[in-house]
Structure formats: C-alpha cells, structure tokens
Length: 168
Image (cartoon, rainbow, N blue to C red):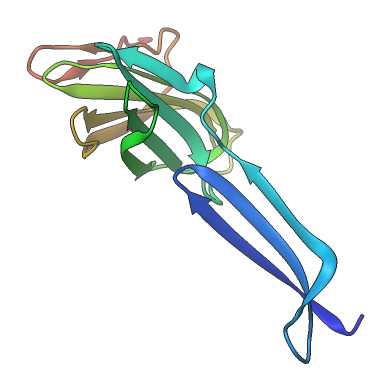
C-alpha cells in the first residue's frame, strides 16, 4: 500500500532474470526486503554436444512465446561462449518438448526442436523445427517446420542439404 511494484526482465547470454521490486511511489526508492530475482536457462551438461571436439549448446523455449532457440559455440579450454546466436522459430510452440544439436555437412550444425504446436482450432500437434546454422559463426542458414516424425534425426548430405524420413 502506498507503493508500486516494478517488474523487469533481462537476459544475460541465455540466463534469464526476472526482477520484482517494490518501490515508494513518491520517491521511487527501493523498499528494503521487497525485492526478488528469479534466474533460469543456464547451460546444463545435457545441453552440450561435442562436435569435432568443440562444445556446442542448444537451448529452446526462450522468450514469452517460447519461439527462441539459442545456439552457442563454447571455448573448449574454459567454456566461455565464442559466439551465441538466437533464432526465432517460424511457429509458436505451445510446449517445447526437447532440442538436440548435431553436426551437419559443409561446416553446418543442425538443430532439431521438438514441440507441440497450436495451429488453430484443432488440438495441439506434434511438430518439429529443423534449423541449420553456420558452425564457425552461428549465422542462420535456414529453418523449416514440419509434423514430427518418429525418427526425428535428420541426415545431412555433402552439399549441405538435410533429409528427414517421411511417415507417409
């Protein structure tokens, strides 16, 4: 009573923080003991994949609509990010189920994001996005969304194309 609550959101290279602060309305001064910070989305060992002895990490479900996917290349010596690329999925997931990263061909990485997609009045569908990024600098090359297949691991060809097994 007699104050205001301020909510702020920040992201520091993949670790999100939600800040809640109670402030005095007249002066804007922080009311001691009425501040909270919640953190999340730090890299876990399960998020890492070593490709040619180089650690990469993929995190999915970032942002308010869960459309964000962050791919990082880490320094093998100290784990510091060498580059970090955030990609927005073309569809809005209702729930992210999982993400994996694997070597593609021609200096590419292939990221597979499995999610439930809400595509209209019908019930949520099992979907997957396949995202291709440059392994040297993280630049987005392309992405595609489709119905999730039983074997979601794509096969990369030497020309950089990616083949996915069809259920038909």
